[in-house]
Length: 547
Image 1 (cartoon, one colour):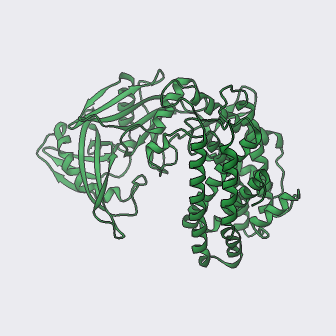
Image 2: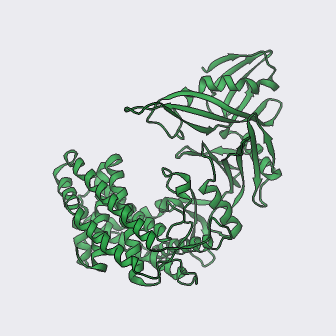
Image 3: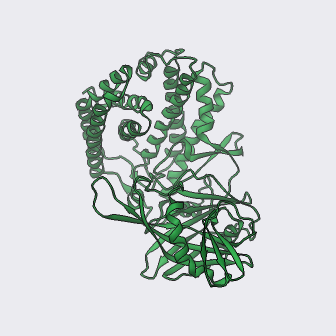
């Protein structure tokens, strides 16, 4: 049973009590939600910074709340830190059916009411869509909630709202299979990369994404702005592209060639085409935050410095991790950890070659965290008779500061992310087969590399996984370049060698990060980025000569 708070206020005025009510129950509730970003430190205090009534009905109130969540730092760090969170609420008279467990019960004169998270309710969906449609301004105690429309297409009625399972730092709701409301939970001052990209690309006519129809921000009296939600059209789909390609890779690593091999190659090429269309659309947006800039020697120097530092961090992390692994893993870890100096030499030679180039393409606004999980497979077929995809989630890497995620970058960073994603889906299929106990992966990823170089098609799942990944990556690049080479702005290097050098440097950057990530989160998966690092060494050596 939830706690009971007693008030003398009538139901219509009870919102004023939420400053006290929510602050008292929020710490326990917040400790169990998926979207709270600081789960490694305890909550010290919760304050309700602002409240506003978004909508009223006879038996329900919909309230927008800004919570300041304080955290007690640990591990010798002094003091505390705090974040702002966007927590929409509904207050419903007892007996009204509301999804989810209530936070607290309020007992007033002649009534009892329950306070719930609003993001599972049709009332909240109706209020949001109505606010966007009419571009409503909702005054709050310390600021203003501003709703804005991007274009037509916002329906007037929300009959069925469904909250999707929390799997990220945001909350998603589908409304009547027509709209999606993305609630940004942690409130970050300034411009949201996801909101900015979604709105700008919608206005630019980029069609391979759920079109933005509206959004809302919270603005303080001092003028600080915090994005709080984005509304987009719902796109009927068959799930993430990851699942589609995992099925394809699984069939291949089990020794069963796909019956529609041509179709599978077409799917991968289509992802490449869509990625190129994104980059061309982004580069064409008439806005100071989007206009392309040259990728020059200063950018190459920054890339080199970052790679050298990342090599050092990753090699040290590998050396420290050896004692946690069984002998077969230890040998592969030592193989990579012992090649740090050679890798740095290759990086420096590659970057010297890039710095002397007159054409390394442009820096533009890119997706920033592109992988197979960021594509949804469409429910229908494309105009040309093949399957199509849409791209989602333009937030960039969520652990980076928002301003860093808004910086322009080479389009090849997105391409590198996709190349690495094909590796991951392929080895996921091989590891699943190994986990079944039906087959061993030979000598692991290292042996797979040797077999693929020899042109063999082995029965070993890891070897077949690597071959599948190489083919997938080539098909993606074929589709990407087919579109990108038609763009006259020169967004990517025109010279094949420069293109290969820059792309491989970005793949190496990604693989080195993955090494550190897997060591800390999925130790048995470290084989995948280790192979990626060795692949990149081989590719760089082929372009600039051995170290």
